[in-house]
Image (tube, rainbow, N blue to C red; front, side, top):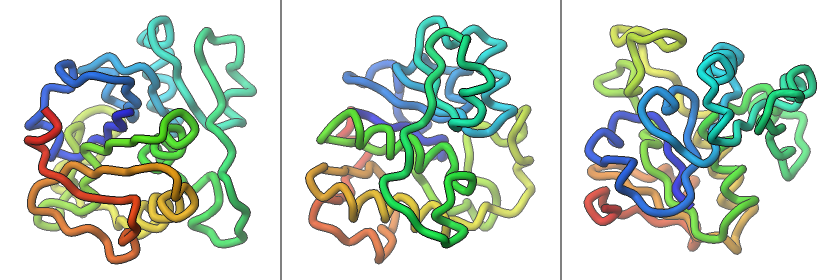
Length: 192
Protein backbone atom coordinates (compact mmCIF):
# COMPACT_ATOMS: atom_id res chain seq x y z
CA UNK A 1 0.00 0.00 0.00
CA UNK A 2 1.43 3.36 -1.05
CA UNK A 3 0.49 6.46 0.96
CA UNK A 4 1.26 9.66 -0.91
CA UNK A 5 1.76 12.96 0.86
CA UNK A 6 2.20 16.27 -0.91
CA UNK A 7 5.77 17.08 0.05
CA UNK A 8 8.01 18.24 -2.76
CA UNK A 9 10.22 15.15 -2.55
CA UNK A 10 7.55 13.20 -4.40
CA UNK A 11 8.07 15.21 -7.60
CA UNK A 12 10.95 12.92 -8.58
CA UNK A 13 8.51 10.01 -8.96
CA UNK A 14 5.77 9.43 -11.52
CA UNK A 15 2.96 8.26 -9.24
CA UNK A 16 1.10 6.68 -12.18
CA UNK A 17 4.00 4.28 -12.75
CA UNK A 18 3.95 2.92 -9.21
CA UNK A 19 2.17 -0.40 -8.71
CA UNK A 20 -0.24 -1.20 -5.94
CA UNK A 21 -3.11 0.38 -4.08
CA UNK A 22 -2.66 4.11 -3.52
CA UNK A 23 -3.94 6.50 -0.87
CA UNK A 24 -3.48 10.19 -1.66
CA UNK A 25 -4.04 13.43 0.18
CA UNK A 26 -6.13 16.42 -0.82
CA UNK A 27 -5.05 18.09 -4.08
CA UNK A 28 -3.35 15.01 -5.51
CA UNK A 29 -6.69 14.68 -7.30
CA UNK A 30 -5.50 17.45 -9.63
CA UNK A 31 -2.68 15.33 -11.01
CA UNK A 32 -3.20 11.63 -10.29
CA UNK A 33 -5.86 9.03 -9.78
CA UNK A 34 -5.56 7.16 -6.51
CA UNK A 35 -7.73 4.40 -5.07
CA UNK A 36 -8.49 6.31 -1.88
CA UNK A 37 -8.42 10.07 -1.40
CA UNK A 38 -8.24 11.62 2.09
CA UNK A 39 -9.77 15.10 2.37
CA UNK A 40 -10.17 16.36 5.93
CA UNK A 41 -9.98 20.01 4.94
CA UNK A 42 -13.47 21.24 4.01
CA UNK A 43 -12.20 23.26 1.04
CA UNK A 44 -10.42 20.20 -0.36
CA UNK A 45 -13.47 17.98 0.20
CA UNK A 46 -15.59 20.51 -1.70
CA UNK A 47 -13.03 20.57 -4.53
CA UNK A 48 -13.02 16.76 -4.70
CA UNK A 49 -16.81 16.48 -4.74
CA UNK A 50 -17.15 19.25 -7.34
CA UNK A 51 -14.62 17.47 -9.56
CA UNK A 52 -16.62 14.20 -9.55
CA UNK A 53 -13.46 12.47 -8.31
CA UNK A 54 -15.67 10.28 -6.14
CA UNK A 55 -16.99 8.53 -9.24
CA UNK A 56 -13.73 6.59 -9.67
CA UNK A 57 -12.16 6.71 -6.19
CA UNK A 58 -13.34 6.42 -2.62
CA UNK A 59 -13.00 9.65 -0.68
CA UNK A 60 -12.50 9.57 3.09
CA UNK A 61 -13.34 12.59 5.22
CA UNK A 62 -14.11 13.58 8.79
CA UNK A 63 -17.05 11.73 10.32
CA UNK A 64 -19.21 14.84 10.82
CA UNK A 65 -18.73 15.94 7.18
CA UNK A 66 -19.52 12.43 5.98
CA UNK A 67 -22.79 12.48 7.95
CA UNK A 68 -23.84 15.66 6.13
CA UNK A 69 -22.81 14.37 2.68
CA UNK A 70 -23.31 10.63 3.01
CA UNK A 71 -25.52 10.44 -0.09
CA UNK A 72 -22.46 11.19 -2.22
CA UNK A 73 -21.25 8.05 -4.01
CA UNK A 74 -18.01 6.59 -2.63
CA UNK A 75 -17.74 9.05 0.28
CA UNK A 76 -16.71 7.38 3.56
CA UNK A 77 -15.95 8.45 7.11
CA UNK A 78 -12.35 8.20 8.27
CA UNK A 79 -11.67 5.34 10.70
CA UNK A 80 -11.85 6.44 14.31
CA UNK A 81 -8.54 7.04 16.06
CA UNK A 82 -7.40 3.78 17.71
CA UNK A 83 -6.81 5.41 21.10
CA UNK A 84 -8.25 8.02 23.43
CA UNK A 85 -6.43 11.04 24.81
CA UNK A 86 -7.33 14.45 26.14
CA UNK A 87 -4.24 16.08 24.60
CA UNK A 88 -4.96 18.65 21.89
CA UNK A 89 -2.70 17.00 19.29
CA UNK A 90 -4.55 13.69 19.80
CA UNK A 91 -7.99 15.09 19.11
CA UNK A 92 -9.43 14.07 15.71
CA UNK A 93 -10.01 17.67 14.65
CA UNK A 94 -6.25 18.31 14.87
CA UNK A 95 -5.35 15.40 12.60
CA UNK A 96 -4.54 16.39 9.03
CA UNK A 97 -4.84 14.45 5.79
CA UNK A 98 -1.34 12.93 6.01
CA UNK A 99 -1.69 11.28 9.44
CA UNK A 100 -5.23 10.21 8.59
CA UNK A 101 -4.01 8.67 5.31
CA UNK A 102 -1.45 6.63 7.29
CA UNK A 103 -4.22 5.54 9.69
CA UNK A 104 -6.38 4.44 6.74
CA UNK A 105 -3.46 2.45 5.34
CA UNK A 106 -3.07 0.71 8.71
CA UNK A 107 -6.63 -0.58 8.38
CA UNK A 108 -6.03 -1.88 4.85
CA UNK A 109 -2.49 -3.30 4.66
CA UNK A 110 0.45 -4.76 6.58
CA UNK A 111 3.10 -3.26 4.25
CA UNK A 112 2.86 0.52 4.06
CA UNK A 113 5.10 2.72 1.93
CA UNK A 114 5.12 6.50 2.51
CA UNK A 115 6.25 9.00 -0.10
CA UNK A 116 6.00 12.79 0.02
CA UNK A 117 5.87 12.94 3.82
CA UNK A 118 8.59 15.55 4.00
CA UNK A 119 7.58 16.97 7.41
CA UNK A 120 10.07 19.83 7.25
CA UNK A 121 10.01 23.06 5.26
CA UNK A 122 12.45 24.07 2.56
CA UNK A 123 14.67 26.79 4.00
CA UNK A 124 11.93 27.59 6.49
CA UNK A 125 9.27 28.00 3.79
CA UNK A 126 6.28 25.89 2.70
CA UNK A 127 7.18 22.43 1.39
CA UNK A 128 4.15 21.33 -0.61
CA UNK A 129 3.76 20.63 -4.31
CA UNK A 130 0.48 22.60 -4.32
CA UNK A 131 1.75 25.80 -2.71
CA UNK A 132 0.59 28.94 -4.50
CA UNK A 133 -2.62 27.21 -5.65
CA UNK A 134 -6.22 27.29 -4.43
CA UNK A 135 -6.67 26.04 -0.84
CA UNK A 136 -2.91 26.06 -0.09
CA UNK A 137 -0.40 28.47 1.43
CA UNK A 138 1.73 30.76 -0.67
CA UNK A 139 5.35 29.74 -1.20
CA UNK A 140 6.71 32.70 0.77
CA UNK A 141 4.83 31.61 3.92
CA UNK A 142 6.61 30.03 6.86
CA UNK A 143 6.63 26.21 6.90
CA UNK A 144 4.03 24.44 9.01
CA UNK A 145 5.37 23.28 12.37
CA UNK A 146 5.55 19.47 11.98
CA UNK A 147 5.26 18.59 15.68
CA UNK A 148 1.64 17.38 15.42
CA UNK A 149 2.39 15.27 12.32
CA UNK A 150 5.45 13.76 13.97
CA UNK A 151 3.51 12.91 17.11
CA UNK A 152 0.43 11.57 15.28
CA UNK A 153 2.24 9.40 12.74
CA UNK A 154 4.67 8.24 15.44
CA UNK A 155 1.69 7.17 17.55
CA UNK A 156 0.47 5.02 14.66
CA UNK A 157 3.93 3.45 14.28
CA UNK A 158 3.89 2.56 17.98
CA UNK A 159 0.35 1.18 17.95
CA UNK A 160 0.61 -0.87 14.75
CA UNK A 161 3.74 -2.86 15.52
CA UNK A 162 2.49 -5.68 13.27
CA UNK A 163 2.74 -3.36 10.23
CA UNK A 164 5.91 -2.59 8.27
CA UNK A 165 6.40 1.08 7.36
CA UNK A 166 8.93 2.25 4.79
CA UNK A 167 9.45 5.98 4.32
CA UNK A 168 10.98 6.90 0.97
CA UNK A 169 13.17 9.99 1.34
CA UNK A 170 16.61 11.15 0.29
CA UNK A 171 18.83 13.17 2.66
CA UNK A 172 16.14 13.26 5.32
CA UNK A 173 16.34 12.76 9.05
CA UNK A 174 13.95 10.38 10.74
CA UNK A 175 12.40 11.97 13.82
CA UNK A 176 13.92 10.42 16.96
CA UNK A 177 10.47 9.41 18.19
CA UNK A 178 10.01 7.28 15.05
CA UNK A 179 12.80 4.85 15.91
CA UNK A 180 10.78 1.63 15.92
CA UNK A 181 11.77 -1.75 14.54
CA UNK A 182 8.82 -1.62 12.11
CA UNK A 183 9.92 1.72 10.55
CA UNK A 184 12.71 2.20 8.03
CA UNK A 185 13.83 4.85 5.57
CA UNK A 186 14.87 4.00 2.02
CA UNK A 187 15.95 5.97 -1.05
CA UNK A 188 13.20 7.27 -3.32
CA UNK A 189 15.00 5.73 -6.30
CA UNK A 190 14.34 2.26 -4.83
CA UNK A 191 10.60 2.86 -4.98
CA UNK A 192 10.57 2.92 -8.78
